[in-house]
Every structure is written in C-alpha cells, then in structure tokens.
Length: 107
Image (cartoon, rainbow, N blue to C red):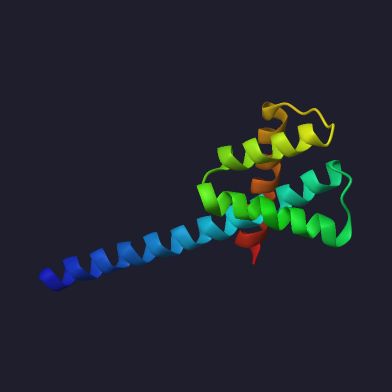
C-alpha cells in the first residue's frame, strides 16, 4: 500500500516540476519577446534592441513578476517620449504570453 502511495506522490512531484519548468520557459520567452516589442517602440534596432530585451528579462528575474516588468518598460517608454497606458502594455504582454505558450507547447 505504501509503495502505491509513494508512486503517486512521486508522479505528482514530477508533474509539478515539469509544469513549473514549462511555466518558467513560457514566461521567460514572453517577457523577452515583449522586451523586443518595447525596444522597437523606443526606436532600438539590432544589438541595441536585443540588449534592451535582455534588460527587460533581467528586471523580471530581479524582482519577479510581470508588474515589475510593466513598471520598468512604462518608465522607459515615458523617458523615450512614448506614452502608453499600463492597460495597453498588459494587453501586449498577454499577446506575447499566448504566443509563447503556443510555441512551447508545439515544440
């Protein structure tokens, strides 16, 4: 009886780990692509756009959570003379999140 319970527990733990790894991959991809989108809005191209996308991803890792990312990019956009509401930014992030989910689930 214990072996069956241990097997179910181990399976649950493995599924949880797998789900968390997928969530991390999806969110990281979404944040990076969102950062690239913001970079274009700021007029950045090529290596500068990639560098900015990396900075946005780092902001997500440092503080954690999309709200910190949104705060950073809204501040950067305002400094660059680009007005955008937080609601618009959230919607755009959600577009990138859906695309990242689709891409990773298809892989």
